[in-house]
Structure formats: structure tokens, C-alpha cells
Length: 234
Image (cartoon, rainbow, N blue to C red; front, side, top):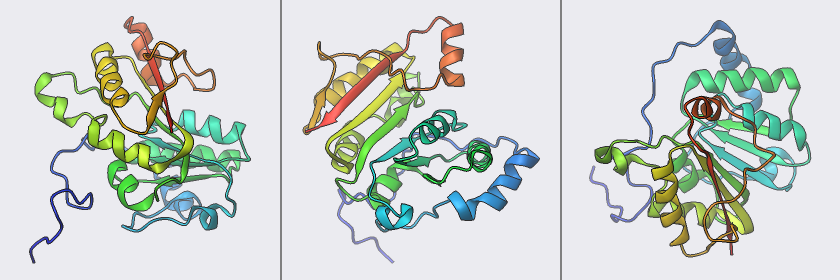
């Protein structure tokens, strides 16, 4: 059957993705968490918008983190702000299993997890004007020039992200790869509907509420400076 969708329809299959699923080994505890805690915290991917108030039982502010890794930052946010809703999107099973286990131990009730491509999740599962914050922390910088096309932060993603934020919602990013930071800045400063919250139109101070992730600690050991960006939906 032919695909009758127009070339600009976001539901068309993408041939270039910003990630490669690694074959990391699941520990027994991670696998057990995936088996036992997914019904409690997991959201199966489906190409239709989620009813977030029904999903959480509240219309409280909602934050979504893309590529949460082991979930340390997301777990800390959900524990510190029980009155808010949090959704994490990650493709790597070990990280998902780790977060599910930690969330269960902490008894969190304001957290959900989706194990799927984040771009497709934003396109089809998250309705426009529904998020209060969108976090993209230390996305893969795809260092080599021939791989730059794989970078998550591009004009198409920026427009999609802006459309999913409520007016006044924020897109928060961080990277320890300076060339990618500059590229992000160029893309986001040029995106209609987004306003850079840095007074000088560049980078913002480190968000004190952001947990120091293993990626950031590794960058610090290597002497890399971290650049934070924060844009508001207007």
C-alpha cells in the first residue's frame, strides 16, 4: 500500500534518527523493574494524543524530559515537586529499567515513562500547547561533520517542540560540546514562537534544580564547559 501522506506530514517515517539503540546488558534488577513496574509507570506508544489530565488524574503542570539516560535528573525532579506531573522518554532499556526501579522504591505517583523515539512521541502522543517544560539535557552531539544531520536540535524539531509548549512554557537544554551549543543557539534563536531567556541572547546560568548527571561529570573530568539554554514559548 502506498503512503498517501504529504512529504511534510510529521507521521511519515523518518530515515534519519538522532539515536542508535545500543545493545547494553540489562541487569536482573532492571529487567525485573521493566516486567513488574511497567504497568504502573509505563505508557505504551500509540499514534494518538494522550489525555494527560486523565492519565495523571490532575491538570497540574507537566514536564517532559527527552533522553533521560538513567533517569537521575527526572527522578529528583519528580520527588522534589510532587504537585507537578513528569514524563520521561528514553529508548534504551537499561536506563528505563533503572528509572522504573528507583521510582518504585521512592513510591512516586507523578511520573510516567515512554520507551520510544521522542520525536514521534512529540508528533503524535503529545498534543499542542500541553507542556509546561521540555528538557533536552546532553543530547548526542554527533561530533563528526558527516553525522551532524543526526543531531536532534534542528529547525524541524525546534518548531515541533515550541508547538507542544503552552504559552510561557520553557524549553531547557544543556550540552558540554561547545560547537553543538553554538549550533543549538543559532537554531533556537531563529525559531518563531521562542524567546531566549538569556539577557544577552546566548546562554543562561546552570539551572540549580538540574541534577549533575554522569554525562556532565564525565565532561567536567575532561575539562568541558557546560552550556545551558532556556527558551520561553511566547
